[in-house]
Image 1 (cartoon, helix red, strand yellow):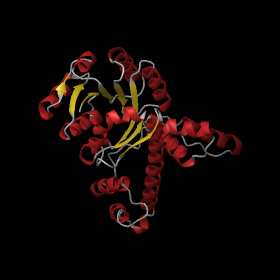
Image 2 (image 1 turned 60 degrees about the vertical axis):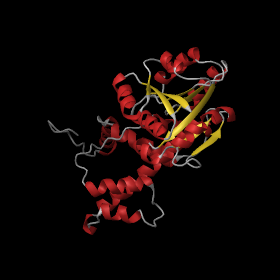
Image 3 (image 1 turned 90 degrees about the vertical axis):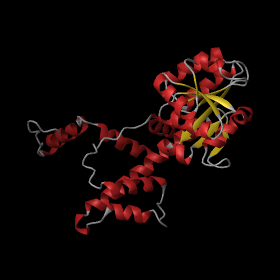
Length: 308
């Protein structure tokens, strides 16, 4: 099989490496030619200089896999590919797209008889070694075209990937996956912070997190990664207490509201990330002002040079 990979960043680049090492020929294109040259030299990837060059180096039915940022960048590439590809070709979006966008993009390509697959992709920087979990949405015909690549990218040919439904279902499933991830991460962080807070017990967080990895109900890959990090550094003094949020956490919370489905853990985990990003603390200033107004409670004044 030969396919194209558009976007050779951390995820796209490592996916390309895994495909090539698994016997799949890959034509690669990235806006940075240095990355293209590096993968061509190190892994034997076929380099491409443009989308037109990509299409010219594929045989029908062409398979073009996008690993690009969600939003306008992905949209622009799909619109360009819609003009370049032929009926029966396939576009795969493996980025973290909103499933509503995937539904629209599927319709755009279907109007030109071009297949579309939305592939929710999980695995992060460890995917090259361990394989990727792939949640795939599309028609059976489109997924069949893609199956040889899915079997190579997944942890094993017969597991770690699944055709979860029609177009849109792949990115929807990945969105919910990431919402669950938010809640699991928040629970682990809060629990370990509580253990640390009871200072008189002198609990070793590295010891406990390693302990929980074996036979515990809460054992998980997230716990594995946390335990490894805590072995190196428990104080985390050089880590800023700011946690960015990806679009998928927000999209999951919005989906819960639209469905009228209670998802308090996911929603609160997202809110905690928002709180960590608040450098100004304006809501807390308002709270202090209100307490002073109704109860005469002291307002703590910021000292000159105080970064709080």
